[in-house]
Structures are given as C-alpha cells and as structure tokens.
Image 1 (cartoon, rainbow, N blue to C red):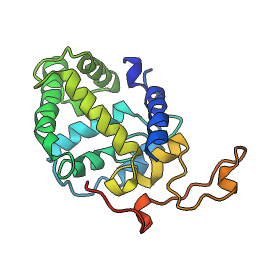
Image 2 (cartoon, helix red, strand yellow):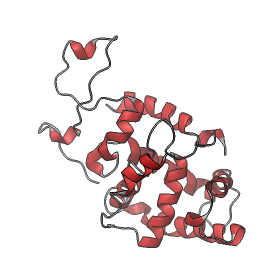
Image 3 (tube, rainbow, N blue to C red):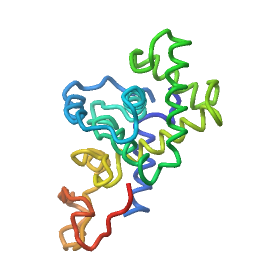
Length: 213
C-alpha cells in the first residue's frame, strides 16, 4: 500500500495536528481488536448496517491495530463518523452513502467478495487503487472519497472522546497526548518526565462549551 496509508505516516501527521489544536500494516493483535469490538453493540445513528460494515473494514486498514497498540476500529472512529453524519458532517451523508456502496461494488466486481469479507491484502490493494483515483463508480472520483474517509478516520481516532471516537483514550495514548488540562503544574512542564494522562475529555471541565457532533 502507498506509504501515505501507513500507521507511521498517520501518527506523524497527528503530532502536528495535536500541536495546533490543543508501509503496510503489521498483523493485528487479537487482544487489541477484541478490546474495541466489545463496544460494537452501540446503536447506529446515521449509517445502516451494510454501510457500517464497509466503513469499519475501511478504517481498520487505514489505521490498523498492530504491535504498537489498537487502531481506528478499536478507537471507534466509525462511531465518530456515524454520529457526525447526523450533525456537523450531515452534508457529507450522500457522499458516504454512494461512496461506501461504490467500495463494496468494486470489491465484488474485482475480487468476487464484499469488501468486508476480503483478506487484508486485497482490501489494501483496493484502497491503494482508490487513493490513486483509479477506481470507477465514485461521484467526484475514488481519490476524493478516499481522502474524505481518511480525514474523518484520523479525526475520529484522535479527537476528543466527547464526539464518539477515541474510545478509552486510545488515540491520545498512541501519540502520547496526556489530555486537556485547566491547570499546568510545575511537574507537567518538566521535559524529563512523561506527563500522566488526565483521562478526561475537555468537556469534563465546565469552562468548555460542548460543540455539535
């Protein structure tokens, strides 16, 4: 898969994003994956079951679980996207409906199986083709839809847990972000000590207004 899809590249991008705002994946660890899948019983808000299945398969390849820890699926980036499509991202709902259907249609025509049922290597191959804008059947091009989902997957994995993603602070733990603070102690300013995670959403503090999701 293209190197821009790798976990290392995504985490590098997030280091910059967190500072402003506050290759091929390795085999998935069974324990890490089961951690996130226990929360899958949450009711869908916007997506239907078929769309959610495709989306979960896609995000699990964009930021996969590996020896470094859980990935986007375990962080519930799918739940973030599902909720956001009923709120702040509601104008993207048609793009998701048509795009996820196109992903599955292409998988079945080219690989003879639904996208979610394909081996990881075949899923990666399709996503690479999409990223290169070489897959037909997408309104505006497959590259455009790929970038849309990748952006929202990153947001869902690393944004404040209030918005439905970053389950159990998985995303923040991956990049070493300790969470929101309203008081910065002397100890937190030390360069030789790793700060203790706050394990709090910004919205656990009354001074922050809850945004739309």
